[in-house]
Figure 1 (cartoon, rainbow over the protein chains, first blue to last red):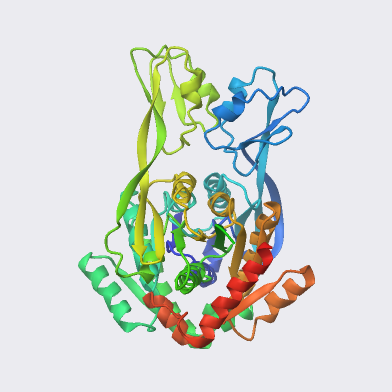
Figure 2: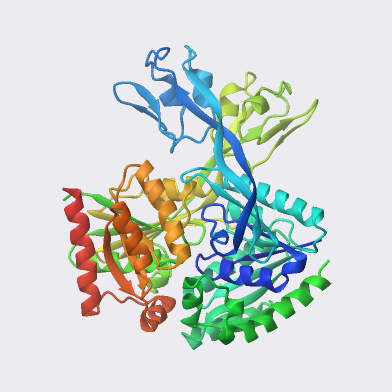
Amino acid sequence: MKKIAFASGKGGAGKTTISMSFHKYIKDVSVFADCDVDAADAFLLLEKEILQKEPFHSGFKYSINETNCIQCGECIASCIYNAIKKSDKHYIDEFACEGCGACEDVCQCNAIFSKSNHCGELFIAETIFNSRMVYARLVPGEDNSGKLVHEVKKVAHQQVLESGKEFLIIDSPPGIGCPLMAAISGVNLLVIIIECSQSGFKDAVRLMDVAGKMKIPFITVLNKSGLNPDIDQNIEQYLQAEKKHLTGKIPFDEEFVRILNRKELIIDSEILSGNLEDIFLKIKNIITLEK
Amino acid sequence: MNNISIAFASGKGGTGKTSLAANFAKYLSQDKNVLLSDLDVEEPNVNIFFPDNHKPLKSNMSTINIPEVDKVKCTYCGECAKKCNFNAIAVFKDRISIFNELCKGCGRCFNVCKTGAIHLKKTEIGKVNEYSNESLAITEGVLNTGDIHTKSLITDVKNYKHCEINIYDCPPGTTCPMVESILDADFVVLVTEPTPFGLHDLSLAIEVVQKLQKRFGIIINKSNDNDFIVEEYCAQNGFQVIEKIPFDRDIAKKCGRGEFYYNDDSYSSKMQKIYDHIKGAMI
């Protein structure tokens, strides 16, 4: 089994749109994992039916028992996140609390208690083209997205094995922090989508740095090219100088948005599909060769 | 109105938070003191719009406290590992391991160690850079590549708040980094785009700002003939669309280059309208 992740650093560069189409391109041999657990969107277009739904628990949430609390203020001093507030009574701001439990250690009157934190849901679903997809929804405002990403990958991995498929396609979250690293760790190939803009370029370079540190092999695809030919050229020169593989270019086209609004995939578009299939064939050939 | 903080956020990435925040900040700085803070510390891009900002006026290290163990004093009792909620410490019979990438720097291990074997060492997670462009000050957080302490760095960048108007360019998403970014904002501008993805992520972002009881308004960026999906949703739920910025090849081109569009008449009036709306909401 081979794992292939699509990431970009920058948000809105086209990760989901492109990876969903890639899934359709090899739908008979792949499972799709949406690892953007902050804002999972692929299910809006791909999902036909939810097959399984599981709660996800991680970490702890702390609260103060008012009856026991003598308002000594020890806990306030112990919290480096300034999450314990004082009004007419002491309370813990759940959004600022990291769940470390330092407050519990200093409380003399057993007023602080914890409970296991329910922070999201994980779904296994059948897609509109009868393949499997796995995604998750973190409760808005929650932490622990890296762990949930890990869980999505684990369950999706299982799905690939159980259904005898060859590929796991991972749609990564934006950024280069914990959730992103959880999404791309251990993949056989990373496809970096570079949005042809100053910010898209800069973000992709930071992502390449992270991928390099994690020793993950990657290739690149330019998206939204042609708006600023000089920027496109800068990116291409950079990739050439750094000896990074450029697999293909997808031009900026208003058709992209129109297709999305019709809830269709870009690979179904007559205007875009030809170029896209060329790129996908190349990616498929590369991953087949990757160890 | 003194010292207000306005956060530009969105659930979905790439909706135009940074370009709007930069244009808005630059517009307001024509007659006000403005601080623009780049809180998208994993991928900071505000400076794309300020090509003269080659070198920061000041660059400060951002750190968290990671434990270090004195192997002579350590009795391998395992209390620190037991108390660590992030599983960042593992203690064996005669060995102890600390996993920096899991540690959140809370210091609980230091507090519970009875033999004084743990001390906390300041460890760099990134930088906070300060720039100045006349009446527009800029602070930017840059997370070290490979580091995961996004939230701590965001908190650090916000410690530099000092202007009449503080504008935050927030990270995408709806979880911890986004929450940390808007936690002390007086008003949250949610930037969306009129696509099914934009709408879905907007609804998640609204869930967060409502939980935090923030005042908020919505801007439809890349506005086109599909706006109705966002507008219908907003009308049904009583949310207000403050302004729309059209989907325009020329604007896309400018944003791609890091060029401003606020100085065009029709756009400066949009910036003013956004400001007036926020000012009105503050009363």
